[in-house]
Amino acid sequence: MNIVNRVLVILVSLIIIVVAGALLLVVLDLLTPVQLATNNWFQDRLTELDNLSGPEFAWAVGILAAFLVLGVFLFIAELGSLGTSKSRMTVTQSELGTVTIREDSVRNIVNYEARSISGVIDSSTKIKEHDNAVAIDCHATIEPGQNIPGLTQELQERIKATVEHHLGRPVSTVHVETNVKTTSSRVR
Amino acid sequence: MLVRKACTSVSKITSEHGSTSVDSIALARAIVVAVENVAAVFDVHAHRPSTAATYGPGETIYGVAVRRETGDITIEIQVRVRYIAALPLPMVSDDIRRAARSAIAELTSDPVGQIDVAIVDLVVHKEG
Image 1 (tube, each protein chain N blue to C red):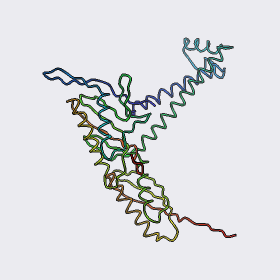
Image 2 (cartoon, chains in turn purple, brown):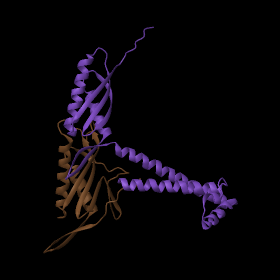
Image 3 (cartoon, rainbow over the protein chains, first blue to last red):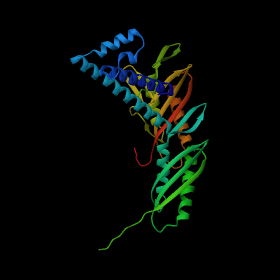
Image 4 (cartoon, chains in turn red, brown):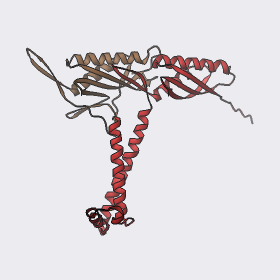
């Protein structure tokens, strides 16, 4: 869904939330029709809602509450999907079209390459884009007894080469943070 | 979540023998087959909800959106790609575009505009 449709859905969900919320407050006698509307026609309609009782009151509360929940659900879902669309990286953009890749996938290949280096047990990665370049933060858990400067240099070189080769985009920095896995052995 | 709806307009090939009509759903179907034949492609990502889909009467093709904008056919393809160390992604996307273009060329002479490729996953271990 393009950005216009998304903004439209967000606006519609906000309208549903405001209208359903206001009507619900009137039905529940927490707001008076005069407080909500200046126009006489609207005040008359709201007064009808305000005077509901018995099963009609219960139906009105149920329907308005359902609309309120629907509006909140749409709003949250659409905001959530806006967030996921941001996590795509552009690989190439030309008159032929655009090639994008999910940031998660780039993280996965960085972690895959990092773990394939002897001495690296686990890794997690953060990726940031600055202008055209990519900046990578890698947190690696390594086995004890490793040559840390040598290992981190190998990690930096491997990660930089992998991302530049696969994405075709320059890597500005690769920050590597290491954590040596400790083995606790207790003899009783 | 709503999806951008690809229209199901029809393109027509006319010759001395008569005319043939091809709708967007047929083009989308052909693109899926062609793209999945590209060696580095694991599959066309046809999972719902998908931001790329082509709608036809009684049928929806997820993962490929065929649209007709300003006379050209524009396409969006969502794929999962095999992680092959020697193969850069721009090269894979070129192969995908080439496959999609030749699939369309077999069905219609309408001009093809931009082909957007969205790589939704890189498959590292799975073989298939």
